[in-house]
Image 1 (tube, helix red, strand yellow):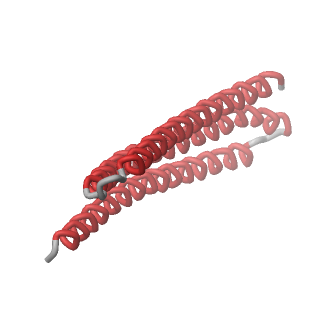
Image 2: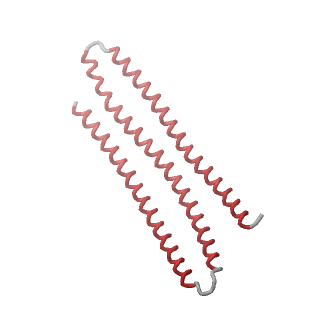
Image 3: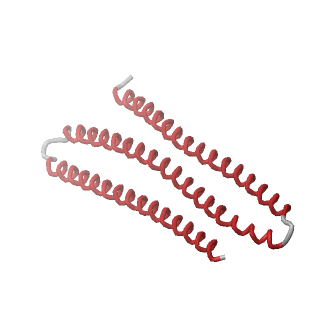
Length: 180
């Protein structure tokens, strides 16, 4: 085979391996979500059964009024479920993000090396154009790095805001439960 064809095949094999790794990571995260959902469903069924049995065992209406104390554990369970989902999504997203960043950095380095090799073959007298192209390439790389950093910061901020909102919901449900 020719050198470009060999390079293409090598790149294709690497890309396929990377895709397989990223798919495995995504599927592992999905598996964790399925496991969490199954556990949550089983717990909810057991809790509902216990609540129904307690309701059927009630002898007087005031016995049923005491069942309102079950609202707080349900709110806590819902908040815990939300935190668990957020943790799984965050963990999986972080793993995929790190993998993608590493792959992007590799591809970018290969592209820069290829471009620089091609620029070395530029005809005499094109030094100004080559310098301008290199400057544009450097500026583009800096802009990409800035955009990636801002996207990462935004994702971190959203994660923190979700955690804060969850905690506020738990506190609010506890204060509602105490006021009754």
